[in-house]
Length: 223
Image (cartoon, rainbow, N blue to C red; front, side):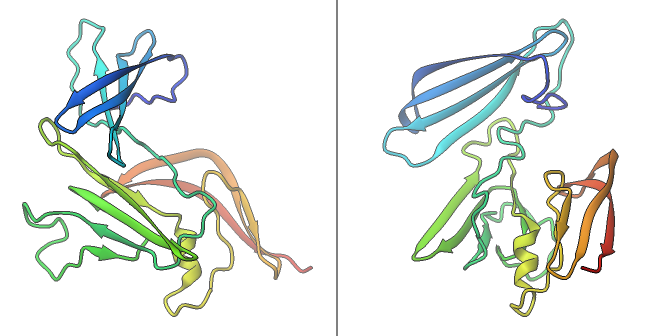
């Protein structure tokens, strides 16, 4: 929420569960509260409704200071990872659920809501799907209400999946690093891609997606 993150040091975390009943029906809510000195309290609520297969996630703040706070951004889920370790490349696709309420950010040009690239941002919802053996896996992410804020859905898959497939369907990826989790990758021919220096990492906003800058070293070793 704004510049405060639930993973920040110093927060005291408490939780409670309660029954809810609203326009979606009856369900069970989990409220998580994070509090520390010199910071507003952070609130996150996750709700499971009876007879529904989705999870409702929401976030907010408790202003425990005498100052006026303006909430600019709330991420109920931020940098969450799904399907880790699963090959999602088979029949992979994402669909932008933007419903046409205003001109598309991409301009007035031929636009398809379906993409097979590795990242998508929608003003409404995003459907993510792929197959594993004989089963199809599907994830739908989006806003339930729009009373107070615009709600955006972002989904990014690890770019390695897209690059391994190649434009012609042939694998052409020599080495790959998923920063900041991985520091070195070596292929069978002895070529290495590694992080030479991680200190002084810079983070910036590039249109829809965050970017992180690293200094990388590519070298070839004779084995």
